[in-house]
Length: 236
Image 1 (cartoon, rainbow, N blue to C red):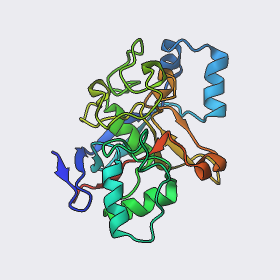
Image 2 (image 1 turned 135 degrees about the horizontal axis):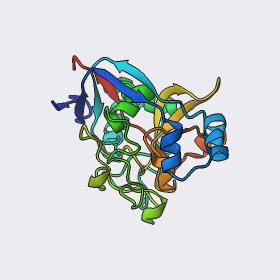
Image 3 (image 1 turned 60 degrees about the vertical axis):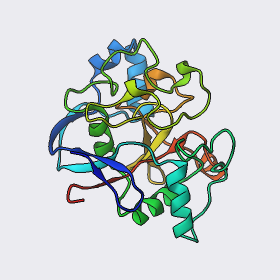
């Protein structure tokens, strides 16, 4: 059942407790047209996980990405918070576009203000794919741009929820494309993993199991393709 966070007004979706498939099989890679050499690359270079069963307790996740509107409210109430450089721009600053040019510290501070936290990779992935191990939030079909990815041709973020076909089995929006999303999963000893792909990402990389990490330089510059959503305990 949905809930609403009293601090930032975000609608949140309950993800029920239980097991799900975390990661991707070699057979699923092959359905995307990858050969053995490419599969090894994804396993080694991007540490894409082999499929396994993971059990999670129930939790809530934001139905939509955190928007410029919500982040502006946060900035009003937390005077020392860093203002993202693009939050008022013509191209990236629509109130209903996802906030971008933020880093993990910014997102964690926002989440703490809202009484929430950033998702683990497991929480993010279950919200995106449900329990049937699908490759994309809408299923396994990758022939058409169901989300704001490179093939959609927008070359910019879209308003949250603008691609209804990208909705996950639980009713969570934009878990493929639009912006990469921050998690607390570790990429290496210095970086965190991000999930979901973005407006400039090819559709095949926007799958529910794809992962990557931004460089320190990209974070300092303020990436236009990186945003976040929050999660909370089921006792909200």
